[in-house]
Length: 311
Figure 1 (tube, one colour):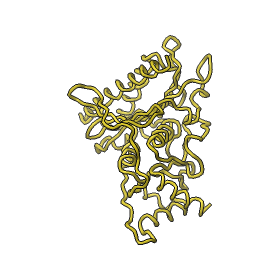
Figure 2: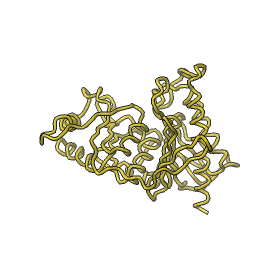
Figure 3: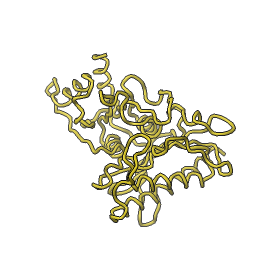
């Protein structure tokens, strides 16, 4: 059945995350540190741990007999599952998000979205180029002071924590809801020189509120899973908007923005490019980038009012 099949797929992903958490925590053993010496398809330097995690995810998912194809941040082309191991799901994933933070021990994570394939016969890119609206399950793992998984199959967002004593994930928060309005904004302000005026005006409003209220706090880890998890937990807004240097934004739609947007909406938050709801964007290429703004509904709507003012 559909539910059984998805359960099986989720079991595989949970197993991958346990293994990944182990690999990440053992990583400080210096022999594995540093670059693997190549640059991945989207221009990030590839570190050995990225490569390890990527291989792990691909091999485990193919061994689950439930995927027909996959899209990874680390692979330029569509990854097609061998015929004898094929199933009916498509998985888009970032095996290790925030990997530039590995060597300073900041939190990093894994992000994924699962879709049902749309065609018969040989899997093609079209199977993966689906709107976020079609996601059947999405989640992220955060390898921090503990290992946490945020997961949704479309009926609310749940948090699970890995209990190392028994090696299992425990449900710690059911039906997570984001605050209507937060007190934190999060983005890389180092790029302010390249921002659109609407963003600089919005930020000015956050720091010097015209109504005499308290300014927002600023937090930015630079590891998207960390920044998003904090935003869901405490409320507020996380932004990676387009700028002069990255006119389409920097984050990738298929395996970064779509899964996070899906989870954010499941928690009652909003996710937008600034002009369009993220989950409505029709992907055209596997590694397409989009501007990305997510968070508490009041905060995202306030940001959109600044976009309108300057459009």
